[in-house]
Length: 349
Ligand code: GLU
Image 1 (cartoon, rainbow, N blue to C red):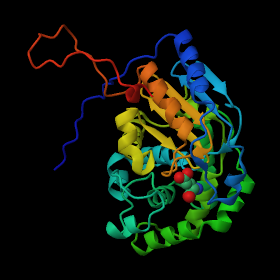
Image 2 (image 1 turned 90 degrees about the horizontal axis):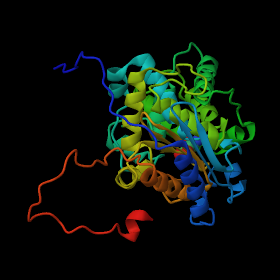
Image 3 (image 1 turned 180 degrees about the vertical axis):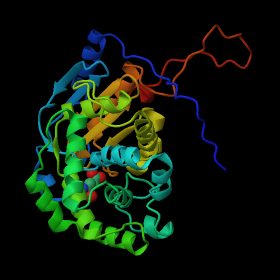
């Protein structure tokens, strides 16, 4: 039964606090976590293990094009899994809400990003576009007659999101191509289930290239601000994707963007986000702006430790959590009212 609603989409968003407060909180977040050394740099792609683990940058871009930053926001690193969100946004625009959700899915697998078992458990359904299986199935759907054309589209779309021409990191691409037998196996398994049409190894090649595009924390903030701004890049003023695909992409990120820790992330931080194994995180406060962080040490799920902590701090101090509300008017006192209490240390950590 079709239950689509034809009425125009209304939005439900607010604004960031004033310029000075955002500036001050970005600096405070950097100061607060600069000395944090928890986690380990990813090394399953050999070249990623050679990064300086001390690098740490936080950037915020608002939907009016304003920017705030602290630390290493101009250092380039490979975008890795964050590319999955942006390629998905484009494919979802080209193919539409229904088709993409049928072909790829939107639900968390509860398993690691490169799980083969997840594919087998779901009869070949990749489940969502943020795990490697779903991301490769998504890349396979990028319009283009050849893999070279698809790659050109991917690079152009991601560059439009960033507002500058992004460049492939050849070393990262080659390092990953020499060690990605697992991704090749996943793509071939998807082909066996009829989930990838065409040559699965060509899909792996385009996917590996998209992961090796170089970005900065500043770029991630602008990409996030584009997703926060109904698909228009607030710095260049150019439309990159449709409002509908923006909305759908953010829903997918909320459910699945932080690997198998997505529920925990939403519970603690309350905004859609996507992380990558090189240490980047892109987070989106719809209508308000984007946050980009870079810090290479990761937790066991593959999410940057300092990046997560910095975004949690900003979510609290800038009022970004999508689930937070306060009563519109005074509440009647009842005996069931809990006694007021101060926030615990855990809640503000
Ligand atoms: N290119 C990486 C892979 O396919 C991306 C992983 C990630 O950032 O989660 O393994």
